[in-house]
Length: 148
Image (cartoon, rainbow, N blue to C red; front, top):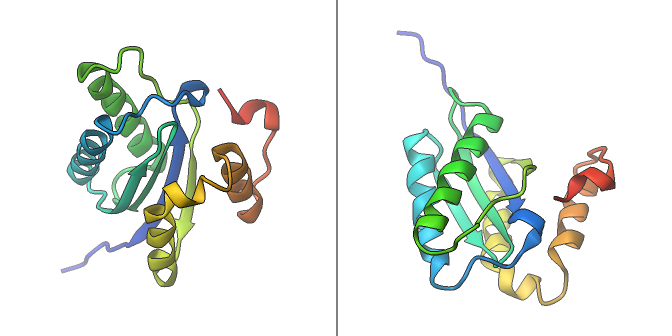
């Protein structure tokens, strides 16, 4: 019987609208659990996740039947609604996102990076971090359209 198999890891990064620090310590575990469950329901399994007050890092697999854009759109719309439901009124994600490929051999390194977000952001802002990702992945971008 023929099979279609894939194992694609993504490091997905996106911020709250205008990078407002809306994700509270109480909302963080709810957001994590919600995205992990949503992702699993879409066939994307979480390796690690961390929501900073103003942005999210999510290391997951990509289902072979869902596009990156569809996955992120569904995650952002539904989790934004969930955050509003739990009391974070007016919660919205930025329109854009970064999705970066991760090789199997680097999954542990990315997990460690995500697990150390608090420490990391004592030294570097989210904007600096995100621009660094864009440059490391050699992505062409227009700075006036990166942020919303």
